[in-house]
Length: 444
Image (tube, rainbow, N blue to C red; front, side, top):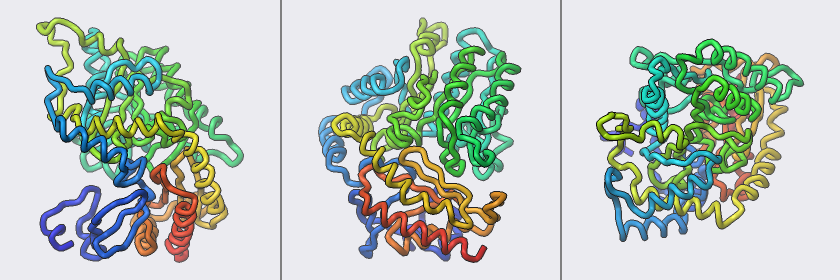
């Protein structure tokens, strides 16, 4: 731990905290478990920041990476190609919503968003519509922490400091259903919220490149959720006003919300789809940006026209990452992952639902393999705890003392476990979570 603190600057961390709370060195992982050097285990209930789908040290993915390593570790993807990236692209075109026909690769979720924003903007430039230079995003949204991705996000904790550096964007009220009236359905509330989006697009269509959304779940935005009907209306309206729809499925793709891709629940195809995290099963950094042939053709011209998409990363389409992604897709194809997840989702809900009666829980919500529990100071009017009290930190610490990795988003405790979790392990997860929430709220 001392060696770590002498040389490392950890992400999303106030390093001074580690004067009181030590970092945890992990020696190995197996299945849903992480194990430290003292033999203590931690159930990885958040899939190591939402990336791990089929458990740590998965033998199928391990074998695929080893085989690729013996053949080709990396080659540039400009002017060259390789078997793994071609096969992966073929699979992604087949699996994603119909109409997405071309794959562009990046290194991580934020990089995928940057590529998508540039791709949309550049498309309109190539189509001689230079006035289209604005992006629309939802309040409380999050798309990453590079400057372009921050620009189209709306979580102040990450964005506020860098505001002077960012693009000017249009932020529209989120459809998340936390503030719906008693008795009001998710669908009714989400559709009611869409009126703001519709008005914005109607008034500013000539200036708007694209709308970017996280389908169904605003993950870093406290796991707030909404109904697929909003996406259906958004797709129709973007078509009406000739505006691109960018779907950020970096966190919600690959089975997290109950279908392979969240957009499927609204029966829509975005113009650009961003994927990462679970794409490689949590093994290696890789991102894919899928788009339509219409967008692709706007860049396809003689070199001298300078219409090419000159965006690149050194490790674009890395063979090892592609091999991990292909092995991950194999697991989806060879087993009924989605069907099994439906059963697990029901069991997760069964264990979380009793918390709805907790005096300091405002809401328990779920989309597929994502469950969120929102702690509040006052249940009747949903008054939040002051963020300075760091109630979620109490839950986190209680988890570590009881073989559980829980990392709440502020006052929101969430479960996003690997798909191989068992009912017995869910029982343990629920017990530790309930105890942690009680410990965090008893001094309300």
